[in-house]
Length: 197
Image (cartoon, rainbow, N blue to C red):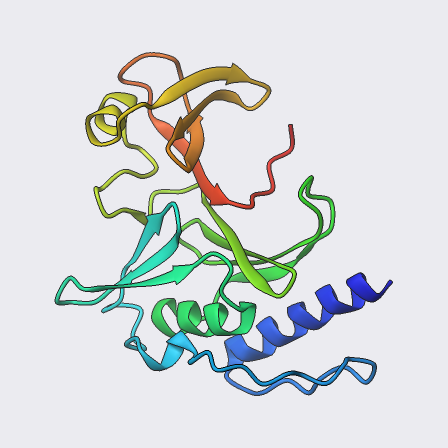
C-alpha cells in the first residue's frame, strides 16, 4: 500500500509540475531529504521549438540550437527529469499511472509526437516512441529502415517474438514491420518499458 501511495504521489507531482505550480506533499508522505542535485530544468532553454529531443540508450538528450546536448539520464530524480522535459518540450498531452506493466507500476508522461517518458520509484526509468518524431542523434527513429539502422549501429540483432520482428541495437530496442533490409521501425524504446508480451 505504501508503494501505491508513493506512485500516486509521483503522478500528482508530475501533473502539477507540468502546470508550473508546486504540489503539496501527501499528508502521510515522509519528510524529504535535501539533495545536492541541481534540477536540469535550470540548464536548458524553455522553448519546445528550440530544444529538440534525441533518443538515447542512456535516457533522452535535449539538443540546443548550437548542437550541444544535455542528457536527461535514466535514474535521475523524477521531478527534475520531468521539469527538464516539459520545460524543453512543453506540456504533455497525456500523463498517468499504468499499473499493469510487467516491470511494475509506471508513471508515464506522453507528448503528441509519440514520445512517452516512464518514471518508476521516483526516478526517470525509460522512454518509448511509436510515431514519427524524435530520433537518435544519428537520425534513427520511427520509419527508419533496418538497413539504415544497421549502417549506424554494429551488431543489430533481429528475432521473431510475440511482439513481432523485435530488434536490439545495443541498449536501443524496437519493432520492425518485417524481416528484410527495407523493413521499417514502427516502435522504439530504451530503459524500463511497458510492452505486453
